[in-house]
Length: 403
Image (cartoon, rainbow, N blue to C red; front, side, top):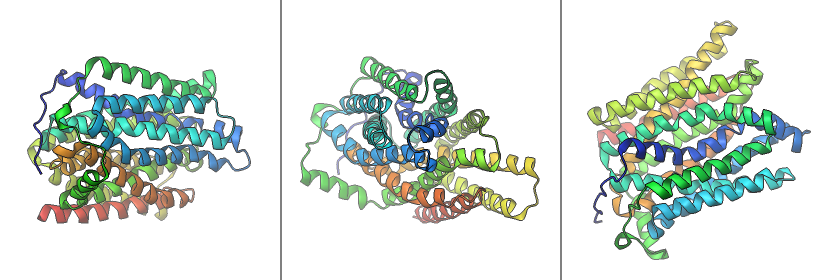
């Protein structure tokens, strides 16, 4: 396969990182700012079964996973900018429909539409980065993006709680529309298209399937996809369980937004650490070290949960350290795994980004579902699941390291 030339960056690097981080953050903002709205949504639509309110998260992830399969080929055919702008427009339409939802089913349908739209900036932005960077430099750029991106999860629950207090849960969805407008305007005015017409690929089944086979038969890409599935399983499982744990396990529902912000900010430091280390140590070595540490930390969390050795304050402190480590694990591995998988895919970057992001998203959701359902009032089941996922991921990466 012939690679395409790397496009020279047109924006100042700091502005480019900030812009891509905002585009990436479309997903995080749409998920994390909804967490404080769960009780209000349950009271409005499903008071007899409040746990069903959690479907607003899974329905969005489902739409995003579905849309991810299409966003890459569209980005290869119509260009990165047009695909991202179209996705943001669909995201905004879904947000407007959700703000006017009259039932839980209509709300979930609107969230699926939002997820479909959010897939475009998620996938096409990764292809846009690959158009301009490769290898360890790409991993470093993605790490810097992830560092800035983590500011959104840090602020999103607090923003959601503030909007809910002022305008009710429907107001949160109008903030999504404003977010999409700002991100789209910034992209439209400042970022040039990185995929020239000569390098665009037609939307024909045969070449699309041929390109898909290139991704799925590349051993490095397959291992990176499988490993990223483990990471997403841990991340999605944690997101689905974290608010109930703060509320039911530790009786800290009121302070949840502040704690979540603190966790996200510490996780951003992990992304910065990775950006500083990855060009010197390499992606695989950093990933192996992170999973090794994660296994130890999670195993200790399982022990402390069920041993009864810690008092309430110490148990909460251990929980905060462990949950921060889970998010930090994502910050120090996802960018590296994407860079590893995308490295040989320059000529089909859009479709490759679709496959490399869609498969882990869907598999991660399937892993996360039983982790969330296993919640027993303690962090124990989730900690066991994270330990197992980290061990599987380490085994996968050990094979890649030997190769």
